[in-house]
Image (cartoon, rainbow, N blue to C red):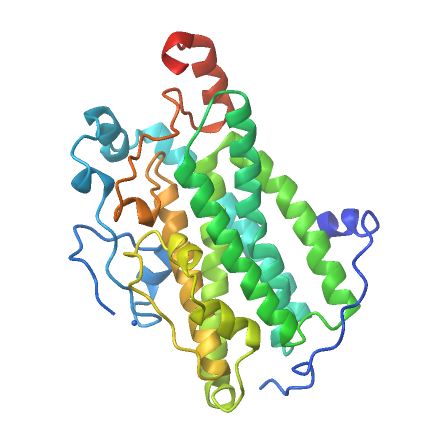
Length: 338
């Protein structure tokens, strides 16, 4: 991975150094639920159930929308073949190797510089969501795919990660030129890699994102355990208070696809609360990325509490990956698509 990063080092000029933050000198040391019909669980949380309390999931789309076709049900529930299992295992092995390689680099560079590490993590973490949207918009332009829910949820995920990034900037995590330089160049490489991966195998791209979000969750959880008492004595950044306790929380609910809207309303009394909520956000991202690995399984949380029909803005010839899209565009009846 070091060789890959070095190939991008002189291709991009980083932004000028932002104004210093009052937090840069800081020494580092939920609600009612509808009855669940099933749970969506992230793999990282299965390994350690004590890390965070998982709230009830949204019902499955088939349980609430009985008009869903049996064809879609069979797609989502049919077990993978032996060959597909081997492909999935290979994809996940590659993703774990890539994630572990980046983690080793971050561990070496940011052993005791927590806020700077978080700034780099959040710069990276928001990249895949607008990479997904880029590919989905391209497919839509070609008439291959139109899924409004995917675009809505991925935008909401990007919006959430952007506010994590703004919080880290207010805490002074981007004070060093090197940290901004490294984060921006990794983001460029990550965007290109995610676009290519998502075009070939959305399942692999979503699993890679799950790995990244898993690492983010574990990083914040460890930080809270080590620095929790100190964080409780520090004030919350203004951007965090505005984001988590503002009047318009539609997008905040939108990225948490395993939750009923309005079921999570964070409290922000100090910096500890901020990091607790950032950690829990990462767990929600992980559950969403887990659900996305089953094609056509993603639904907007607000779709369940409104009259929104899951078929709205959906082309009949939706597809998984560019190979599948090209195949279906050649073999499908244009009259059915249009």
